[in-house]
Amino acid sequence: MPSFPLTLETWLHSLPPGTDPRRVNLDAQAVPIAANAGNFVIRHHFLPHGSSPNRGTYPRIVQYLNMYPVEFK
Image (cartoon, rainbow, N blue to C red; front, side, top):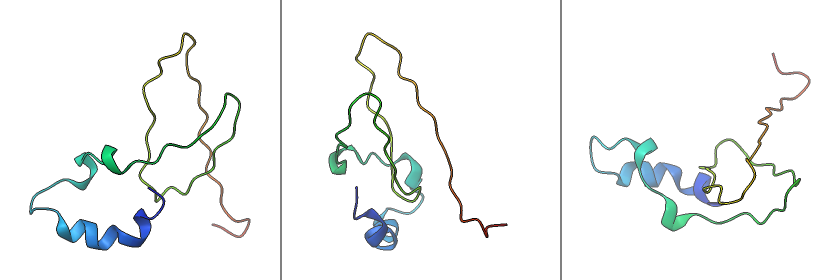
């Protein structure tokens, strides 16, 4: 959902009162990221994200990294 950060405030205000935004199903708006085994995918943490089910015969292994500027304290 590449444009999500641009519409976040509007989307949050459009939710019915009492709705937990973390539990809203956004599957219909999802955009698949094409990648092969061994690819490195970089995304901004602000984007909604998730992984599809692993339908392969081998386990899926991921490593999550956070990167900060050198000056970050």
